[in-house]
Amino acid sequence: MNDKGLEVFNFGKHKNKVVTQVFKEEPSYYDWMMNGDFPMDTKRKLTEIKLRSFKK
View 1 (cartoon, rainbow, N blue to C red):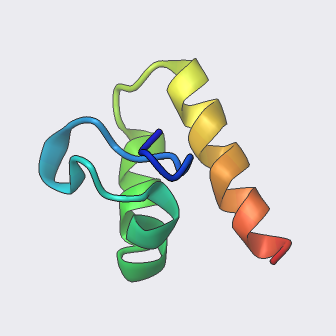
View 2 (cartoon, rainbow, N blue to C red):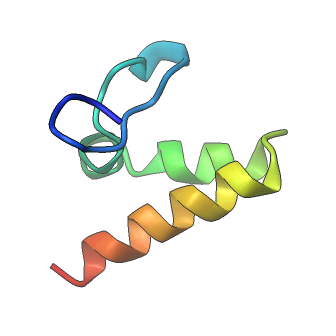
């Protein structure tokens, strides 16, 4: 979380960027992470964030 309470990536090329903004600008990043070797909890949280953006 950043100082505004938004989820941010803490690694990679999008380090310190807001997750929802990255998914908006580069939708394929979500797919890359879902197909990658990331923990299930990480994938679950990313899916939760992505689905939340559809409700707006």
